[in-house]
Length: 437
Image 1 (cartoon, helix red, strand yellow):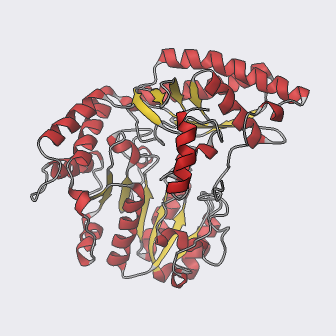
Image 2 (cartoon, rainbow, N blue to C red):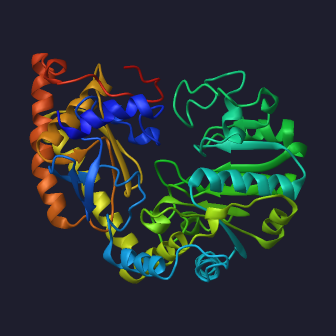
């Protein structure tokens, strides 16, 4: 127990939920023992409040830091932007440069608007789609943030979003008048989508979905959604907040040759600096002028400056090739280490967004034990790995040794019936759960 754990106890008395982001709650990783706070982060190295150094082989700022923490080239650009004034009565020219760059990367698009978070970007895309079509209903497939338009899907049945978000998330505070405005279909399920279109086609403003979820997209499914969306006159939105810049320079939909009317980006596009973009076709995007979509801090300078620097370095260094290579190595490593230990696991995910589950009677407990044992060996490690450009071969080699050792320990503990007794704290949370003292 250290300063980070003590500070988190204090935080829970001052901050509802303890943190600003559910995905960063210590209870999601290793309750009572996760370091919780950092004093410095650089490359893939993280120092906690006690000065302990860890290697981040987990989620790298929830996937935001695709070049690595405190990338010197991006930071230098941001420092210059700060020195020249990050906010002004006038507008920063970087927002025009970034729009040109994004449209160059995505030739189907003509215009861009900005926000500073992914949730804002999704909400803006839906507002624009509704303004463009004059319709209200939205069909959703995936996780698209915390705003009312999205959580409205859980009104009347709090299990509706279980397969898209987190189980048991009640839509408290969402106006009940929004019931029926957000309809869900599962990824790859043509029949469920057809039912929505057949029943609500004339009222559909938008279909929003992640182009890929955990694996490469089935192209016939995406083509079907694209075709049906056009047929009923709805706006087709690709949510690239997670998948963007993960498998290529830009949206993953570029690899598939299937183009939306709007695409939204955040996370990886600016390497940890707050930035989000809504990119789209002129005929749709100009409808933003018919609604009120405006915010002071969408005009600050550091976000666009960071995004330009990140994208330029990404393209120049061919970052996609590196992170795909490293990500594939880690996925293979998990499977090989598990096979050698005799530990049954399931490895999944795109190479740059890898994931594994330990099979057994209590997989969540085993995942918690993995995180605990790896932390003891100096790693921030979890069941997910969001690779960055800062992850190099030597890091994979060192992690491999620790992973082989830990998987064997877990296998032996299961065989001897000792695995739960090895935990030093509670089992981690699997989803939304109200925190109690």
